[in-house]
Amino acid sequence: MNILKTITHNKLALASLVVLGVLYTMALFAPFFAPYHYDDDDVLTVYAPPSQIHLIDGNNRVSPPFVYRRNVSLNEYYQRVYVEDTMKSCPVKLFVRGSRYKLFGLFESDIHFFGAPGTKVFLCGADSRGRDIFSRILYGAQVSLSIGIVGALLSLGIGMVVGGIAGYAGGSVDNALMRLCEVIMCVPAFYLMLALRAAFPPYLRSLEVYLLIVVILSLIGWASIARIIRGLSLSLREREFVYAARASGLSHVAIITRHILPHTFSYVLAAFFLSIPGYIGAEAALSLLGLG
Image 1 (cartoon, rainbow, N blue to C red):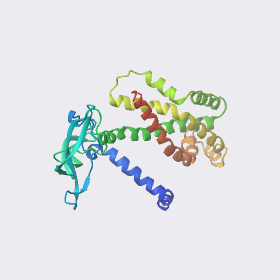
Image 2 (image 1 turned 45 degrees about the vertical axis):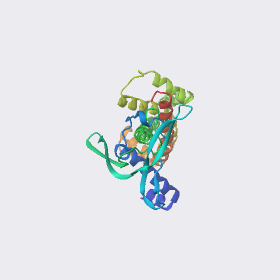
Image 3 (image 1 turned 60 degrees about the horizontal axis):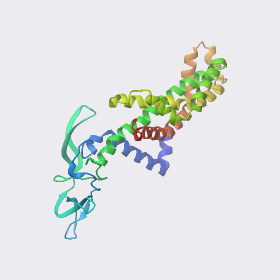
Image 4 (image 1 turned 120 degrees about the horizontal axis):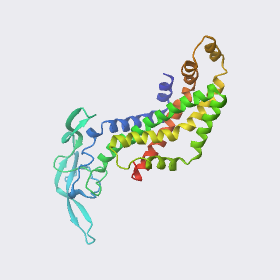
């Protein structure tokens, strides 16, 4: 409740939360919000520029949103030129029928959030195969945004376990685990990420690639988190409630999970949200190099 009160009283935080909510909602329901399937190509719309959505008709009157059909021609450099045909307008409508899809792999539908029956609407233009870039962005956001959350959660989980054990146990266990963390942190993260990805076959199914990237990012990111959790655990293990837990006969695992790690949640929560952009950027870098 305190977190919610803080967010609602901070306009910048509230605006950021709204933007994130919109982005994740559109990514989650990408097949519905995308006007076309991400792989729908068309040789007639290769490198088509973004569509201009008009609100003023030919008589200079305010009109519901519409787009003009576009004619394609080649200029003297044999480049495609798209020219609007102002005699052929197509209204932009909500909840139109289009290509069929399965939402979450379960619910089949052909209803899309918007579209222009009679022509194509490219909010961000089209690529070299005539595919809608906006639709591809939404489908790609499903991977990038979810990898950020899943990767951060897995890294935090590993880091909390390793750091909690190292800080509570101390001695040779602490020394061995921290040296392992230092070895991982000494290797440049980007090159380690490339090496781990290159160790696996280049041609994998989409789900296998997704899980592989999550594991790679998690294996790289947990070490720094473990060091912080270890430092917190070192101080927490000397607190009175930990001595009381030992005196009551609780096992070491119970003490770590019930009494030590819960007291690190304030740091863990901040680290979780701050690490998400880094995981998204790392996934984008792998994809840019053709390894994602």
